[in-house]
Image (cartoon, rainbow, N blue to C red):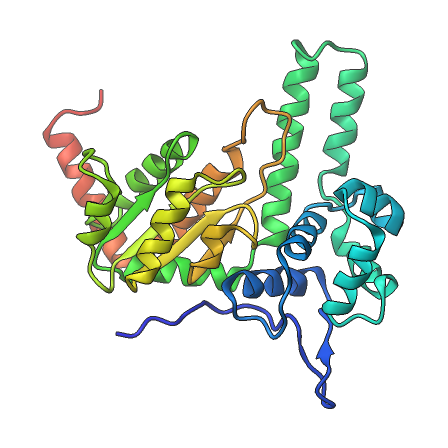
Length: 316
């Protein structure tokens, strides 16, 4: 079976009848284009600085800096001319047209209410008390809303299809993302067989990738700052022709660049490290999605699991 290079997505940038680049008409189009650029599949080329600027801009949902090219340039630590060139490279006549897309109603931050609530709480409460608890909870609520609004259902369905149909699935995440990887493996094992952590027995990542067959799938997970080992393993697996599902934060992520399906997860909070809350939710969505894609097999697997739990008196 030949696996497609990438899953379904919106059109993003294209060409108008006279051959000129047609600029993205929505924020979702911009996200799709960013993913195509990172994979080398876009009808245009953006340099590293422009790619980083676009990725940063797409994270500024509802930010007042979007109201001014000067404020936005200062926010991103770039020159205003960089933003003008970026807009023109994307097919817009100038920054103003690009800005109009960014200021579309869909860019209004769904978490504004939660942020205001958190700011109110922090105004009269020390961060070590209820104010800190409230702020972090509201920020995670906002991330969940962003995940829901920004979810590319074409990419998500392609991810579940790849995971469901693969003979074998390996999941790779280290440091904090080892927790995510372990949770995803546990959940997928409830509904299908042959799902493993890459290098779970400490015999080596290289050996684990080498043991995988052409139709197997590697689910790889990391967010900025990306773990070098995870990025290198994903690239090596892709070069071997394995299917890659990336669970990451940005379309410009090195994991997304080598994937056939990418699930993008926002995680910006005041937590002292990268927050995993929305990533765990994304794992739950993938597990449920895979179960729904193959309901009879999932029911049989869950029934057998229940029988073994009873047989071994696992629960009281």
